Image (cartoon, rainbow, N blue to C red):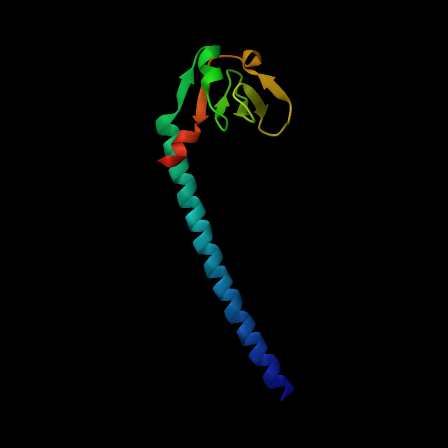
Length: 110
């Protein structure tokens, strides 16, 4: 009787593992598809900003790459820029121009 219970539990567990693996594959595929879509939107819409006034006009949530290749995000208020992995705030006039706008919040509607 104990062997039968153990086998039954093992079979149910194996079925659940297979279900979870299928769910993970589906989730991974969905993430890959979404990332591909976001990448295409960014590539199609990326543009250069060549002066400080244009840079200051970018809204909170914008992401740029500066002339030295650093990625920064506008956070909290327009003109407040942060490096992706640091919380050091920079003003727009400290960022080497030109910059490439990699993400603009308006693009999320596309």
